[in-house]
Length: 77
Image (cartoon, rainbow, N blue to C red; front, side, top):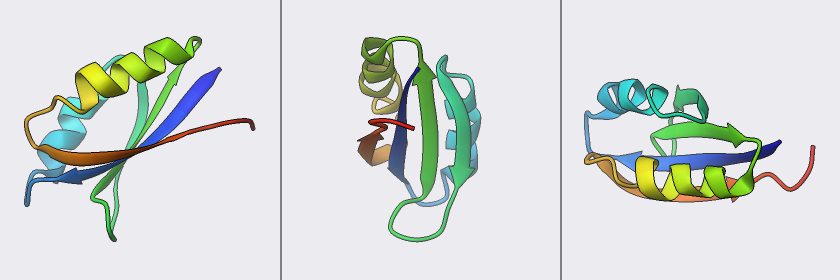
């Protein structure tokens, strides 16, 4: 299974709204609000790495209140 963790910077105060939106996206399996440099972490999983990349590029990064992302693709478990 292909997996990636996406670290997300959000607009100020938009964390809860983004959690709701992220949970609706297919292939997003977990979402957490965190403290530190990033505001949220989303786990993306699929049987195909291309679907993981498409989810990040065309769905997560295009959400209106997402300022920036950093993607970490899981190499092996």
